Structures are given as C-alpha cells and as structure tokens.
Length: 442
Image (cartoon, rainbow, N blue to C red; front, side, top):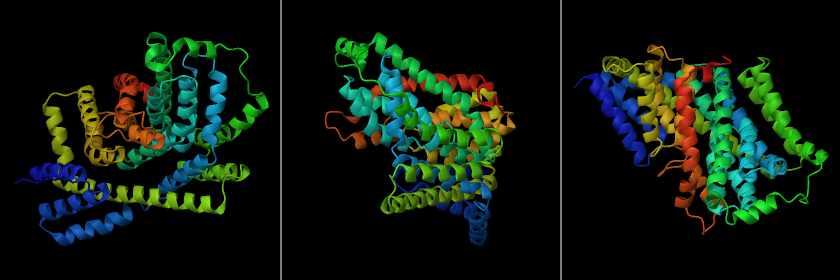
C-alpha cells in the first residue's frame, strides 16, 4: 500500500470519526499520529513530531488575537450593545418595506464588525429582534429565519474567528484576510437587504401575517420617534469600537494582536460604564474566554499536526497533480472545491471543515496561481452557507433553541433561510469569478 493510499484512507477515517461524534481535535490528533506511525513505521517519530507541533504550532505572538477578540465579543454581548444597535436601526428604518428585517441585517452587520462570531449574533438577535418583528406582524418563522440568515455575517465581516483560523492554516496575513473580507461582507449585507425588500414586495404573505395591517402600521406618521441624543448615545459604544479596532487595523496603526487588545479594553470600558458587568458576570466572561480560546488553540495544534502528516504522505502534491491532469483550470478547481465545502457543510461544523480541507487545498490553490486571500474568502463564504443548510445548520439550531417557541419548528426556520442561501450562493459565484472583489484593497 502506497503512502498516498494511506493518506486518502486516513482522511476518510477522520471524517468518519467526526461523524461518529468524536471531537475534531482528538480525531485530528489520532489520525495524524497513526498516519505518521504507519507511513514512517516509527512510533518514536510520531511522538517527536507531536511534541514539536505542540510547541511550534501556536508559539507566536499572533495567536494572542484569538483570546483578545473572543474577550471583546463576549464583553460586547454582555453589555446589551446588540439590543441598542437594533433599536436604533429599527427607528431609522421603520418606514421602509420590511424595515425590521432590514434593521436586523443592519444591526447584525455592525455587531459582526465587533464580535466576529455568528453564534453570538444568532443568540443575541433571537432575543432582541424576533419578539419585536413578531409584535409588528411578521411571521415568527420568517423573523427567526431572518436572524439565522443574517447572523452568518459574523463569519465574514472582520474581525472574524474563521478568517483568523484560515489565516493561520494557510499561513497568510490575518490583517490581509480582514481587509479581503470587507467588500464581500458589504456585498452580502447589501444582497440580504435587497432580497428582503424584494421578497416582501412580491410575496408579502411569506413575510407578514396581515400585509395590509402591517403596511398601515409602517406608514403611521404618529409613531413614537427616538430623540437624536438618545440615538447617538445608543450608537456611540459600537461605533467607537468599530472605529477604534478596524480603523486602527486598516490604517496600519495597530497589528491584529494590538487591535484585539485595544478592542477588548474598549469593550471592558463600555461594559463598566453601562454597569452591566458585576464580578460574577466578569468571572463568567473570563471563563468563557478561556474555554473558547483554549479550544480553538488546541484545534490549531491538531490541524498543524494533521497538516504535517499530509505532507509526509505527499497528499497535497498528489492531489495537485490529479487536478492538473484532469484539465481543471483555477476557476474549475474553485468550483469543484466550493461544491465539496458546501456538501461538507451539511454534515460538519465550520471549524472542522477548515481544519480538514485548508491544509490540503491551500497548497494546491497556491500552485495554480490563485491568490490565497481570495481563496480564503471563497472558502469562508462556502463554509458560511453550511451554517444554514440541513441537517447540521448550527445557526438555525441556535436560533431555534434560543427562541424556544413550540409554534416555530426547526423545519420552518430552515425554509425561511432559503432566500438567504440563494443570496450567499450568488455572492460566492461573483467572488469566485471576480477575484478583485476580495483583493481590491490588498
């Protein structure tokens, strides 16, 4: 049996272990260790490489970005900044067709620019936006689907944990990945807004329980208005954080790690000023930061070990040869790769897909002349779609569990996210066809 055959068998074993319920980090460690042992017939070498990887895998100042951005996101969540952002967006957009749906997308876009975690956005806006949309005559399942669909913006609009993980795995600049995500993120948010207005105009019964009553309520000029000073006070914290973190990052004044530190400190000041952080909540935030960060760093060590095993097996070079022999050009390879990611998204979570596929695919893409920043945005866009597709659809399940409404089934929420998936597929195709959309500011 050749080393190449062993490599393919081990990838199949890895996917099988994950589907059977083994945690992805342990599955990666086990498969990589067994692969090196089998290929080199030397268990001591496998232990030695594990030892070296455990240290070198995360022994870099850059990896401090992970706990810092996680801490910033958790502090922002506990400060009710998401609720305030939605209330302002609701006031500004209340007379627009599907105004509350558009407000949810707008608030999620701003919130994503601080937290970088889709699940956090889904949980926050399920509590904030769904009850408000339902009160104004929107169908509960459509309201839940809007929150689930727009929550995926957190994985593309920087700073995003998925972009950080991809940058580490593909060995490209994390700051560059953040910049590459700007235009596609804005396109995705704009696409969602256009789709919501179009669907509400063409199929009002899909969105609203009583379209005529909702129209009358929307056009009611006597509706209470939020004073401008109140609006400014509610928006100031989130705007300050976005300008501080992303402004400093994009102007080159901060490195990604420094931006994470400044952002976490700014979020701490916001939480303290709002008196939303007592010692018990602070302990909970610190504990969650530690748990999430250690989990991600352990995954990155495991992925580095797995990547070394693939190199020893010669798998990336072999697959690159097969791709070139098959006549696939760069665009054909991107299409084939995106389809694989979309299929994997139906059964695996986002991080698992990145950890399994990027070590294999990134060297092939680079060898075919594809810019790795562009490749990363295509990867993250395709992975994001998996957050909404059954049977896994973690964003949909997060919204369903947080909502806890017996009248809204998970199947209804999946159906309501179909227009969002269509927009994401369209944006994915545009970004794949026109690399300049992700490399414009690089």
